[in-house]
Length: 306
Image (cartoon, rainbow, N blue to C red; front, side):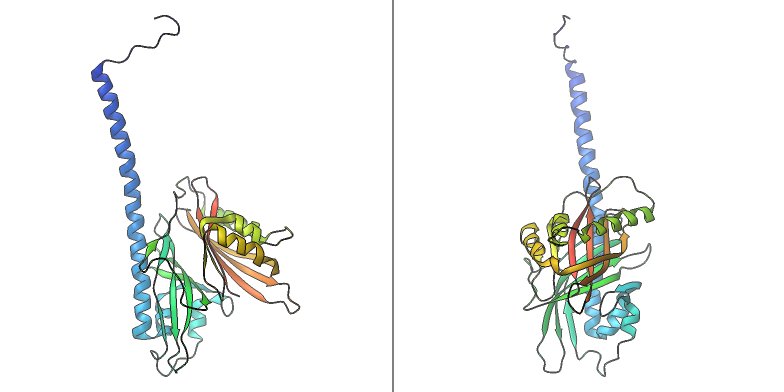
């Protein structure tokens, strides 16, 4: 063979063998990808079922009893003060008629970690006091956790009020639209939590326009912004414009904790915000993060209590 000549093609049977092996490798890759989606879909479905059972319990047993049943023992409350959520609910007075006031809600969107131990759900809620007062509307956001061999329980429940019924594009439940998740090597859990907490701290912002620009840059393309008194902002365009205009009122933002799933592909953070008012006010935030294949954390939800 002269220099520059193409190498001879393998015999036809060998070509067929190579093509067959390539097809088998592709099929195996697609099967592995589909197989990895199945447990995630099953975990998401079981979490949605738990949320619906939680809502049903509020109707039959009363709001307080339902929360005490479905809150995790270590659940965190951000309102009215930061603390253990179960202790907050235990401290509330028992109403004469536990089912007179009604709180109804329904999961409409959510996601779950590939390890099946952490997830989030969001949807509309309606609160009816049951004393001839008008019903109030809002949107809840709940973080769910699950230990091996145990049922799903709420790790943190946060909501915002809305001027009218909370708007969602579809009537039923829809899994969040997201790309591929992190599937790389794991690090010690405390290292993963520290890394996410540090990422959250980067959003405190040092630029003149406040932390809103930093939050906007971290927001996923389908990210969601929850602010009391208004409808949810979904998507990077509307949410980013709003964030940059809204955030300068924040003077300090202090990350307090970060929790990461076993697969280290989903996590959440929460912390404290202090305002620049003459009489400073304190608010709290909850953020949910999804880890991209590159290893970077992307903000999928930003919820403020104020």
